[in-house]
Length: 370
Ligand code: EPS
Image (cartoon, rainbow, N blue to C red; front, side, top):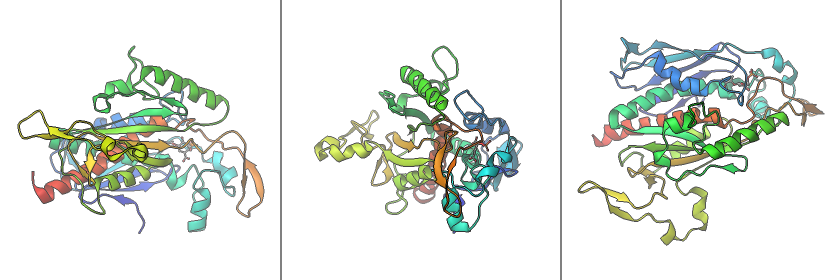
């Protein structure tokens, strides 16, 4: 009922709020013997953490994970793995004025309508802060994918406002392209098309000056997976990946492969022809409009997904709204917010995709063997 768990054989359960003591994840189903350290977790947590650049929230937290159980002498034991990330830099006083007022675009109204009251500090349980726990779990999932089949999951920004990136071959983008510019400095927007990245950063800086925010889109690519992940009906891989991405805050759309572009295509234009692969007996397709899944089951081609992320709802700019008794008022949100969610969305999206794929890989192996 409560919906705080996700997955079957690789199962995560999270707890925590933006302004509580911390966020925690308990992971069941981690195979024994996987090397795991706090430093491994920190790498992706650093890519997600607030305060990492001038174009994200300036709430400054180190997001250092503590492994509470499930690891002994640097390797997973196979028992439940618990990871805690403490909250450090909360300023709950910023939220005193929204206790009885509904911030447009936020979950304030729907939480009150459901529970009768809410933790109004930050976003409470619906805060992006909760994703610290998922990113930590995502590191474990990435390790399982890599160890068991050499698979890799990588995300990057493809659109901010009207600025679109030109990515010729999603499967060839590397972590280096996403994190660094050619001069070695940090690619703070996480768009591998360098010209588009510059324009995106200027746009984010411009909307921030206007006390506003801007939306965008991310692409997430999984390579190196075998054919066969996903179940035929309700647990299609595409359905579980969509649920995984839609469970992240601010996601308004998910598509894979040609996505909504299929609406204008004829069947003969959309079908990817099957062809012999490089190795004897191997089968592949000449193109990848199907985004690596057919019948909701992986084909072995790269899985290519996109998520549309809304502009941050919290704005310093005054917006009309109502308070709890329905009286009209205006609100200007205090606190420290991202003018664009996309740069920090990337590790969150990678984590949810990796968690889903690790679960389906374990399920595939359990039923169909190696
Ligand atoms: C959040 C509000 C902002 C964000 C925060 C989530 O922080 P503050 O509570 O200081 O206003 O910066 O996000 C994070 C700190 C994070 O790690 O993602 C909220 O609405 O809860």
